[in-house]
Image (cartoon, rainbow, N blue to C red):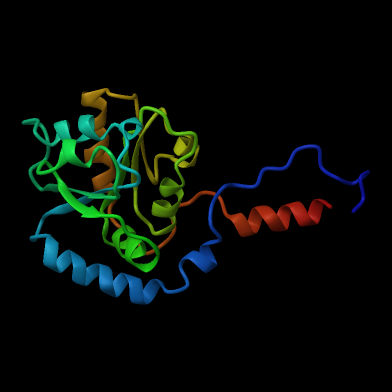
Length: 198
């Protein structure tokens, strides 16, 4: 370690290594297509929320949007997670319960888009995970991981702005699903860059 050579500022993103995260991608994508075949009709889109069902995640607001006449009828909302807000949204969206590991990867791969409407979110690792699986994202401007979002991978909308949210939803769905990562940063490249500076 050479202090004289040490960089004064280093940026290492809070994301998983894509090579490790997508190691079993071919198996996961096959399961995801089977899942879509069971849960979606032709022309339907799967919008996923994945996370803790807590008030700060703004799920009541999100579910209320599905009852709007402007909500696209072809979009089905799937909610993955558990928490105290479950009862308040029961029967208003498809609740899939809490999942981890491979099951969660299948949901990422099956999604047409991920939504994170939080009223407060220091980062939101689920955004990075979705982008790694090629899923476009729709996040409120209160989500720290909004820094990962650009025109090619998603939309950041002003918190609780219904018009901007619904417009953003149409936009992210138009981006389509991809088998390639949509992350604009790479943990491996960032670490290698840091090593080169040392």
